[in-house]
Length: 517
Image (tube, rainbow, N blue to C red; front, side):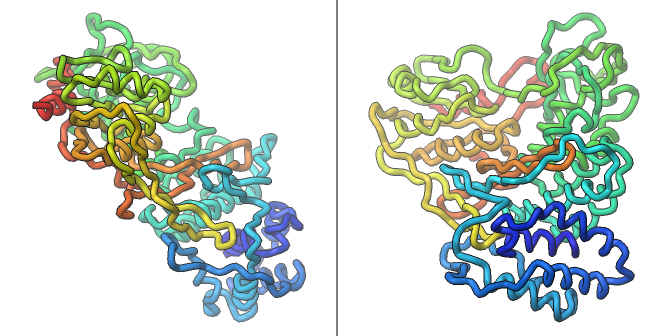
């Protein structure tokens, strides 16, 4: 209850929203009294006395109003009126504070980003020099993240979690962590329960399992629900891994068991995103030789190979074609991969593809640029492709619909068929851009479900010099159907098979080519 009341006051009490109080200090000051309270009634009395000490609440003028007309997500504030939960005094105080919130659009701890209008958390010290363990600051981290998501995540309701229960489950684990590593892991578990592919404790990936400074010189991806060697950084040699090998054990431990152990620490919006992120890291570990069990066709092999030193940040995976951004696959088929395409070259791409029957836009990876400009050359009239929701500083927790995002036609115009390739490696901007290309008349999406995490990100600083991100804007189709956790769902389902990877085939591209004629 302290965490919920502290967070509510942080974003509603006029003395806090104007920066009159050091709100982290106030929490640390209150902790001993609440921890010592013999029961919830006594704790509620302590909270009520705390609010009294902060001074009287002056009537608002003008007062904030929650407009229902364009509301997509409501604030979860009904609990402040629950007298059975809070007691008469505390409930009355919180209700009074809520009714008298100002309509000035100002928050000391939050502002809106200038262009996108997602929340930017401000005046949040990261306490980089914190010495561990420190139960107070560790608890502050749990309260800060939970309330940031409670009031500034557009996808809190889409998480599928009982969000107050998430806080309840996290308090003891995080506050009582005995080391910085344990603290980071427990915090990681809490963040992952937002089920937002943007929400991972990015400051702490070094302690996220599997742990180690090296990895195998291969790329792994999931095919037919199994981890498969997709590409090799170096050529194959005797007793080494080969493309198409199914990884069944690492260091004599079954992959299924390892993945089950790792899963709580990986924030993902859906299964596709989880498998993609797991595949990136699953061969990480101690440097040197490691035993890998594989299935190669009908043969089971036990190989000894070596993990090599790798960059601290393992690169994002792409599954598109090698070579230049734009390619003519045949006189009838133009191909463009967004992982290498540049927005200023959009006209050049359209002109180069002018004689083709089809343009294949490959978004199996993260785009190198924002390519919605290209979509302007694929439509002949104004075409909406997305709707967003944005937060309300006067009503923390509320998200409102904004005007649809549209494509404005420009010359030259490509008049052939448009085919979009997607898979689990497409996330965030990749998904938003896929929505724009999908809006092109008669466009077809081929591939598999994307990672389901879209919207400009909000960064949450946390004690110990840590931080996580979370989606800061809601992203929907023009008809208001959701994309978060859903991802881009293809019109034509296609994906790699183990045999296809072994043979060096691109089965998604093959499925697209069948649609050209």
